Length: 253
Image (cartoon, rainbow, N blue to C red; front, side, top):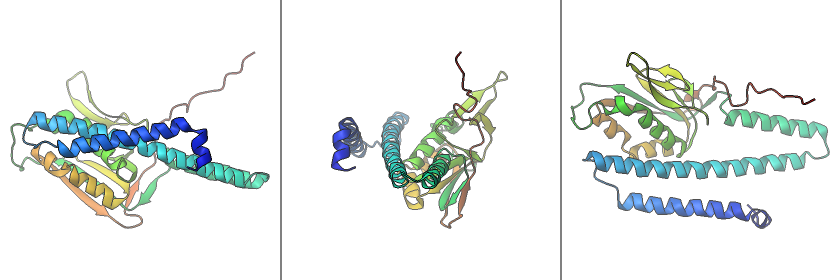
């Protein structure tokens, strides 16, 4: 952002500066106070703090991405000024970019897959037994947030593409049966998270966050596979409805 833009948008500069300061403070707290994962209360505190840090980091990344995209679009429109054909091509490129970012088109590229399945052969730990089944929506959401905050461009769970309006939640029916739903569609184990993006950063984030050992404590086998090829992982397009899709223009008399 150049000097003129900064003068026009002082609130944006202060907002981004504030986010950076908060992220630095919370990262310091996390490093200096990371608990020993031997107690349930310590684990809960660590997960809460990590979740807040990831959310702030993801928000900062989204803001910076939006600024970059809008700046690029503005440059295209300025370059096409005075030519209807060039302007139309710029608008078409922008429409394709928006569709890709909204998850309306499939994405292929280098990435990783994370497969989680129950494994009763793993050592039984009374403290963590059954925790995944009770909190699978929160645990999967945390993994997804970590991936998005560390280089993931597109993510799906069991073929369900995740977009800004997606939900991951446990739903209990009248018979008492609990089912995990992604985008309101029921999904069943094994859960396979597919993510396209920066392979090294995504894998490092899952390693630092102890995803595999934490899930193993809950008797859940977790296998992380790397797919480095240009079509290593394919994340399908989002198939649900988007906000405003069914909106209609109302004419006033």
